[in-house]
Image 1 (cartoon, rainbow, N blue to C red):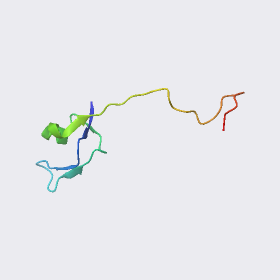
Image 2 (cartoon, one colour; image 1 turned 90 degrees about the vertical axis):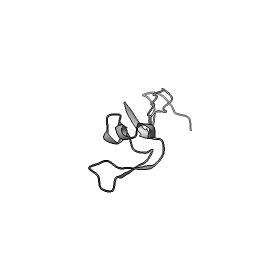
Image 3 (cartoon, rainbow, N blue to C red; image 1 turned 30 degrees about the vertical axis):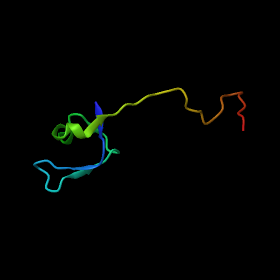
Image 4 (cartoon, one colour; image 1 turned 90 degrees about the horizontal axis):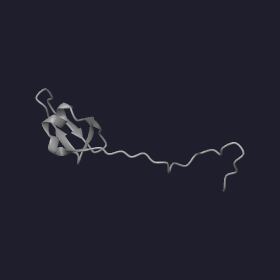
Length: 66
């Protein structure tokens, strides 16, 4: 499962001197050492796929509205 930080924070591990800043833009696996150290700081990523994506070009014989 993939997770992301709920908010930006500085995560330090024993083998890191200064740590690393994680933000909600970072996507990590749930078995990542940073996630295991602070699971309360992460939330699962939910993704949905739909058919509401517009096609950029017309199909053969189809006229597109402007």
